[in-house]
Length: 215
Image (cartoon, rainbow, N blue to C red; front, side, top):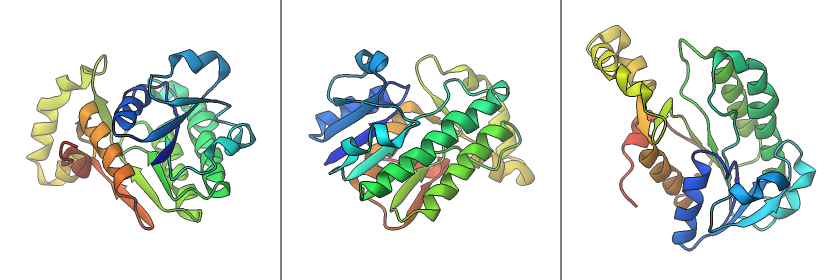
């Protein structure tokens, strides 16, 4: 397949692209001129701005899948304005570019919601999902809460609290919805989504992401 990826220099993107290339896919990855060198091997670099559709829509032409991974690094409550100006704005632009290029399948990494914390972050991602649903697109939305991996392991300290919450009927659903997933599980889920295009809009929650088999 021919796949367009935004956020290819990020935590997930720079690990996903080599996997897709190893599977024989042709990957086009968007990056600003100053970030091109940070893209991993296995892709064709496309120079552009994730906040300006006209800077990259031509590169999306002919792609069968669009994977949107752009987002503020290390989300925290103090970055509330950036969630609107980067996360939501880039999703809006990506959806418009995918529609204009007539991409067959749009893949978006959202976040688990509702949640008792990070309200600005979940709200921006929820509104991005609404943009996807309103567009004439087939799409897969992935909803992890926190992705465990290299340099992203501190939430392991919360595992006892997750276990206790899962034992309390009133807290069980929230513990499952806001559960932790590993980087490997996320990569498998993204590979699955690309290889099995959705009809309409499909949501992969934490339970579905955890259940992904090895590719």
